[in-house]
Image (cartoon, rainbow, N blue to C red; front, side, top):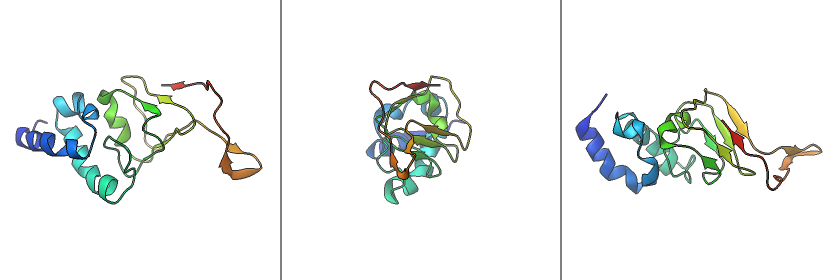
Length: 133
């Protein structure tokens, strides 16, 4: 569904909150759903602070550890606007292949816990394997 006035207004406002390189692709150019995600996530993400440091719209119902260690195509922005997904990627990169769909409540984890102390994470091994979906 295309809403030209909504999209035009969103293109002016949303780059103030999100990195422009993520505000492109099929969800922003072929429909207005990407802009809807921006507005829906703005309050919880940028004002309340859930996933505040993530430079693209991501639902507050998801958790992303490190935007720098998450590689994906903007056409797959839908993967971050479902619910319950957990991207624990502070120890290694997660590479999501173009066209991948991640189901709700999926966790992608790049580190493990120390078996004798679950509060500590084991460091990633260099050059650690990458997860490619």
